[in-house]
Amino acid sequence: MHKIELHGVVKRFGQNTVCDGIDLTVEKDQMVCLIGASGAGKSTLLRCINLLEPIEDGEIYLDGEDISIPGLNPQRVRAKIGMVFQNFNLFPHMTAFENTMLAPKRVQGLSKSQLKSEIEELFERFELADRMHNYPDQLSGGQQQRVAIVRALAMKPEVMLFDEITSALDPQLVGDVLDVLLKLKSQGMTMVLATHEMQFARQAADKVCFLKDGKIIEEGSSEEIFGTPKRPETKAFLARALK
Amino acid sequence: MPIPEAAGMTRRERYEQKQRLKSLLIAAASTVCVIMALVILVPMTPGWEKVQKSFFDGTVLAKTFPKLLDAFTVNVMIFTWSAPAIAILGLLIALARDAKSPALFPLRIFGAAFTDVFRGVPVILTVYLIGFGIPGLGLPRPWNSPFIWGSLALVLTYSAYVAEIFRAGIDSVHPSQRSAALSLGLSERQVMRDVILPQAVRNVVPSQMNMLIALQKDVSLLSFIGPVEIFRQAGVFKSLFANFTPYVGAAIIFLIVTIPATRYADYLMARQMRERR
Image 1 (cartoon, rainbow over the protein chains, first blue to last red):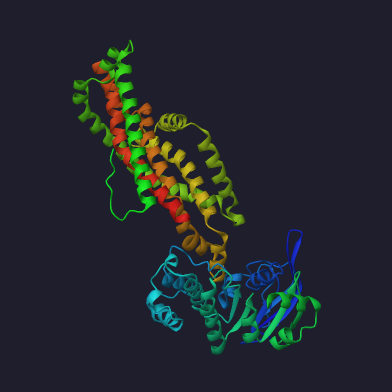
Image 2 (image 1 turned 180 degrees about the vertical axis):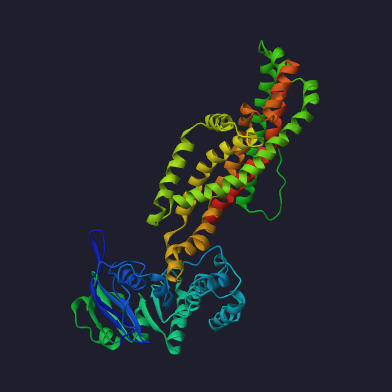
């Protein structure tokens, strides 16, 4: 059974078809990178998987269960799928610790004392222990993004979605965040990334999908996509992106 | 005027110091001119002596001021119980207007109608209609008190405005905050309570401060239906002394309260502008 399976997913915003019949499978502990130009539908696809956007047509399966049934309560699904955004989206009125504690406290009904040591451990693991009681505006972009990752991990998700999480960072901070992804991969985590970091995708991805105009027009291992791309569109995109 | 030559000043710093001094002198000179004009010209008007006697009579002021202060405690009292009621009702109306569940549709309609009605009617009319209308039902004491129904009129009117400000605050929180909170598995209600509302409320504090200042002044409208607060007390003294000075005294008391409050609201507003930048 696949961890995630998409069948003919269609998403429209008004007249604009953003995802145009997407098929995709993600295996357990696999890192899948979605690449392609801005507007190709990468971010929207991630938002659909997390049920932040209802889909017009097609199905999405998580562990074989159809999670795209209209009317299904999305909360239970979202608790299993963590998501990290381009602009961090930390809650500015809470400290890093409070940001992280909110969802486990509210959704799983755990108390602060039950969560404290676990969250402290997470912050330690991602080298943020000294930043735990800072507010987001006291943190650098890279630190904020790592806190956002920790916040998602605190829900113990089975899948993590990353939506261009390094695009808003200064170049010298990108490395720290990508290191976190490698760490997660080595510890075993199913991950889907929308990314413009081609070098990273080339080194770390188990599978790479090239999107254009809402369709996956080529997919394969990173050697296949970056080494011997077949479609001319893929070649053209990579020639520009890897320049 | 010689400028002290501080050692180690850059060309730019010397220039700016000179500019500062120059604008300070101009500002001072212009202020002096305006004040001189007022002090000399106003007393030259034909009615000045009469106006001075009936509006700025020192002895009347000294006699009435302590009593006016006493009466002002009535304003403070009405303000003190109305303000929290307005905050709570305003927030509830704002939330009702954003309710999404179809079962709560009547609540949405009610919220919309409420804000339309009470923003559309002059405060003084609402005070009259509720303040005279409801006690007219022949309710037993203390339920016929104009304090209760007058305050209710203020609460209803101000809640409508305060609700609109809260709604604007809710809209001012970026949708990405909602996405992030939902993606963590929080319910719509939890997202509103823990993520959206705390930010929305903080964003509208300066605007709500201005509502508080306006309320403090509008408490005086209750004088028309009975309670002897400062404006009515001043009216009583006016008749007693045949002199308008008590009104000036009342105005002074209001300013003592509202000027610091206005300054504080402006300070909060300016700070928020800085934070947004």
